[in-house]
Length: 444
Image 1 (cartoon, helix red, strand yellow):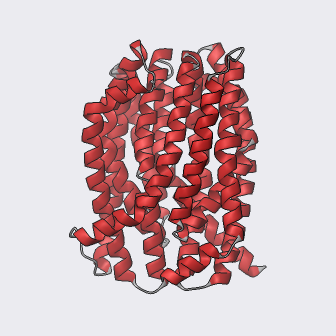
Image 2: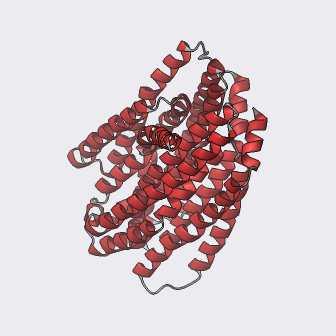
Image 3: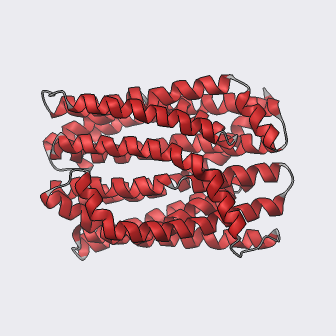
């Protein structure tokens, strides 16, 4: 019993601060949504398109945090502290390179992506304006991801919570100033988030480099290390690409269902991303603990942590789901003055809340498998999930739904039953076997 209490305490002590870092980008978008929603329906719909592209790009690079966490934690668990920190520094250099390249590409081709997602007229104009204003904040945000991989691997994650709170405060103040005082509209919203992203990036990069110097790790870019970090993270990139493609195509379906459905989807999706990052914090805590146990070649500890992390994810999903139902009923006016959109927001939040316990369990197991560096399995299972989900979306688009309420309920039911459900089955079957543990320990 004492072992279980200790594991639960370790999970919570890592998960709560980790949540602070994870919610940074969704919080920025949530703040943007709450402010921009009062500009007009076209602005809110344009934000949905622009923020989806941004979150997709950032999400595709989440391997920077996941891969770095696993590498640092396993090397620390094996007693190789300097090598662990150097792996983290390599990840930071990779983050900066990817962030700069992605920013340039999206600056020139972001408008075309908005068109491909179905944006037209004023919605397209608003989406392009938002992207142009925010896009060069990407390198700062990706530095945050990579630096946090170091802190998670070292199990020193309190600073991530401090940085997230500070970033949210900066973003909120600037958002209100730029949009409501200076009247910069959606451009002001994007500019505020860009500044907040770089603020957090610098705030976390400096102490990460100080810790690197303390352990005798070099700050210089090592081409071999950067290439190794990129190679190890490639299956994770494929995993995330499959998942992000699924979410992007969900937005495309919402776009075809009409401006009001899309606007409501943006509000619910912002809240959903916030909730999922709370659940992901449990998974990442499990990831760090399991990676450390695997580094020490302790199978029994890895199993214990897997069970406790899955249970914590399930219970957290239940708690968040209850809060989501309440928010769906009383908080929808915060996102839009339109009564129709408020109703659609309520419907969407109630549907997603019902399935959050399943999502919490699945996300916890996802983190465990990432901690074991079971990347190829995750790439395969997520690609399979995406293929089935995209076929389901195609079928749903071919059916005429009676009204916007049915359309909104359908969107969130498909996400929960197909997108989350298939991943839950795959992850559940995987952790019941010994393959993932045996392979992880054999790599040490």
